[in-house]
Length: 393
Image (tube, rainbow, N blue to C red; front, side):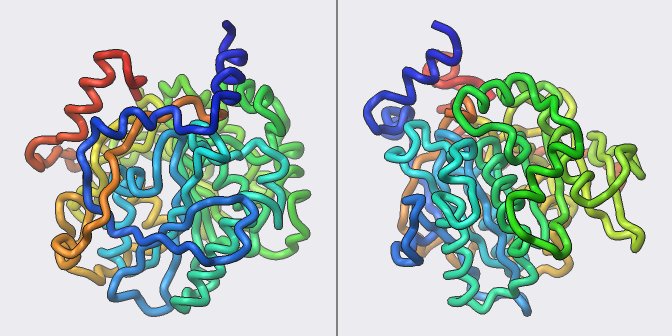
């Protein structure tokens, strides 16, 4: 069977998570995320999870984080370390979660027209979750951000395009541009080949997604150069899309290495960075992990959560302007604040493998990995990969 036929076959299986059978093999881990069931009419039928630290910063910010396929909100939070960052720097965290009843592989439906239009489907559900948190915790509406991995990265593109009035900035990891697919076959083609659309055509897709007439969100793009799940050309297309929206030239205004990886930057007449792009050398499909500039390590290695010597979560939080001051005590190794580690009882599986999506500062100091003891999740991931039960990142 061809790849397309295989995905179509999986898509029409009974409504279930393709990786649900692996959950029994995974150890339980604590999570600080709390589920909210009443936040709006929820037209996209998504689940809402959030984390609000005990001490929020003044004019608190909100970061929306979207997981990849085969992952849950809690497993991606553990892997990428976002609740640890939120506790450390005093911002609120929203992590929407896809349900297997919407997509058998728990991918956000970034290519479904009914889910990617303003006021409809999954995009509307995420917007309702944001409104709920803003009202409940007095979030500064000028400090709302979104990021995501893979299908979650593509859905972050959707949110930035359809709700540019909501977000100050966004970060897309191993994702795709907005509007390049309106069905599964187009999504697979874009994943495998990238987009051949010109910059004006790509920019037009964003401009036509809303009636927005104000300032556009800033964009940070991350992609591994050895990604064989989502072609790295998609990162170039995302950059072209937003350069056109911002009216910026194609040629980067600055190029430098950050933690050994190339970073390109574009800024406006006031010197404010509007678009940045990181190419993670020799990295496959996933979220880059590493020691952060504050000498903390955020996240835990696992499937599609890859040690690369650079902490994408920390750098993205810094791009959002969230790392100026430490607001909380140091974090525990699991990513749970120490003051909460003994009180959290909810359990979730460690990060599961992600199937196909459709379904500068220069730093000269070396980045040394810190030992955190036995990485149980990593051992299980490697064992499952060796047995052919989990695809390798």
